[in-house]
Amino acid sequence: MVAYSGGMKTLLLLALMAAPAYAGPADHNTMLTVLTGLQTSRGSVMAGLRIDMADGWKTYWRAPGDAGIPPQIKWADSTNVGSIAFHWPVPEVFEQDGMRSIGYHDTVTIPVEVFPNSAGEIHLLGSINIGVCEEICVPVSLEFDKILPLDAPRDAAITAALLNRPLTASEASVGIVTCTIVQTSDGMQITTRTALAQQGPEAVVIETSDPYIWVSEPKVTRTATHITATSDLIHVDGTSFAVDRSGIRITVLGQGRAVDIQGCTAS
Image 1 (cartoon, rainbow, N blue to C red):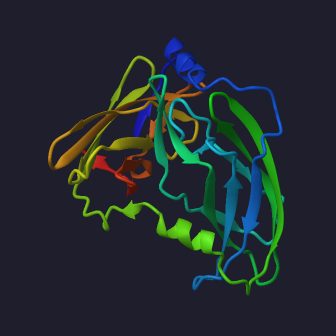
Image 2 (image 1 turned 90 degrees about the vertical axis):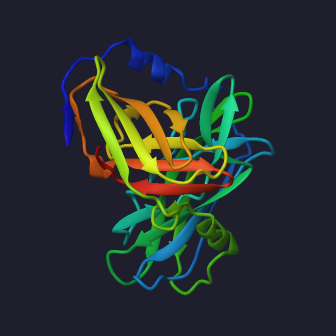
């Protein structure tokens, strides 16, 4: 665990202002459908949130990049739901005006694994707030209200999205993953070094277990055997914070695939 105590400078404000400008709320022909699926062997139920957008428009992945807006999914009003796990399919990397965003275009299905509190009916009730973008971005709030049957066949879109998941570190033959964390005047800087064979052009996303820590787009260097990425870490409130290396999540994107790496060790 590495801790930082200090103030916040204008760098954070500039970073937060770098997100795309939003048009006023509008009906953008964005539609949400809750797909139902089978009960799994571990007692959960696999559902799906399918988001259909107008042709050429996109929305964002869980870590949207400096030019994106993170989706917010609310499900606290649901009944017989103990916890939910979102299985994000492999996203795309978009470049516009020198800024990077990460997400999906036209249509995406996000598998949602629901772990009930008890046997019986599961009622999903809530909303998802997203940005959908082309030349401008439009904020969209989509509500869902769905009873999940336990005996429904799995929708084909859920199956396809699950097959399009990132590889685990083991599946991708990832070797040793280290991270060096140092203090800066505004927060911290993290450098990750991952033993991973190159698979063509790549992008790296670094996340922490604290959603209130802003992580900059990494500067990436490559050798034949290792990929190195360096990002700045700043708390959105400008307050002190700690970084747990076991909570670091590194995603390497490239060539239509992704590798999801959990945790790193001190170098």
